[in-house]
Length: 447
Image 1 (tube, one colour):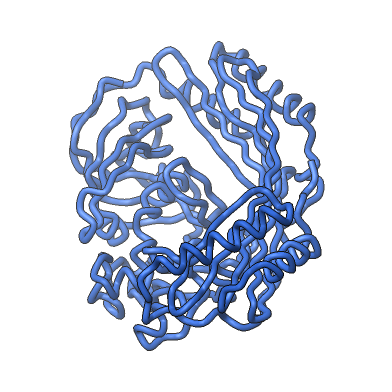
Image 2 (cartoon, one colour):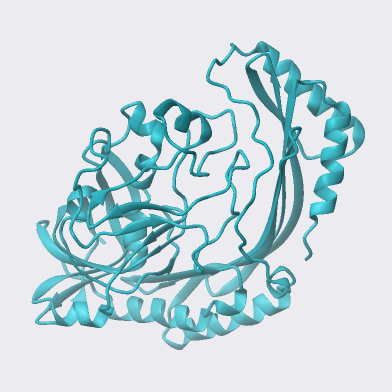
């Protein structure tokens, strides 16, 4: 599988857009994906799919109005029709007095996230890897299910003021769930370079959780000390960071409205948005083509900065930080390259230091209860264990939690070094494992 879109090809597409667009200003957002996936369940590979697609989205600006139209057909008649549709839609919009002119050419920092070996990974190679995982499951009469995917994505953003932005990167993911008669275990890893994945280690981790969590015991709901593995941390934090968008604060939708510059979290909480971190992913520009900047969001628990798209920055008298989404949108901006500083403890260190508590693999089915106190509810899944006298004793039936993420980040006692982390409830981040006191579990379950 090879990447369909190059910078030169993107430029050729944009030249046709400019040829047919009669708008005052024109922007073209071009994306190309090439992805392949091997899916397995019941200890059998049951699906292998591959697809390639290139899509063009044209945004027209006329008389302080803007709209966009999209197509996945790149012949000249289709491009012309898309340009005409974008202009016709723009003329139907109410004028937006806050609409800014398209940005001029920008300079971007360098990120290198494209690995040909990942883009060209074959179905046979994925299948051979999955086979070894299935053999591990069968060794202990477990049932394995999961996904091994690989591919590449390219993004280009060009406009009529001369801005040209292009980025390509590869992606790979391996996730596995091991099922026993009364328990389950899970593990997942992603990377731009597929050789950084360790499916055998992930399968072993998931298998150990399924085996050690068998015949789980009841535990009454209460406040417990918890050790959250990185995926559990990510699952919760994903609901917090959209509140660091300038527009959300400006409109009073954020839990940080009126709290910028205040101490909101614990002394040991340091967070930044950093697209250039070696464990991060994504392009060095935002949905408007502005360069992404490193932004220190939290220092020693104090909310130091927000992120700003161009329009929000102008409203609030700030500089744009390169975190906007493609226009038009209602969201404004958000930090999507979260890096949270950690500590030096290992998971074993945290377990040994815990007289009584719980080890949480991950959460699922998370919903927001109170957006201003950032109270979330959800359930544990795929590995919940009781710790006593510094040792894991047995599996525990899953529990439902009702917990403020803000309060949680005031109660962090220990952290591991941060690592690239993937979950099922949020976008990827670089976050640590955490030991947290008085985490609130509100009800028990039957499994």
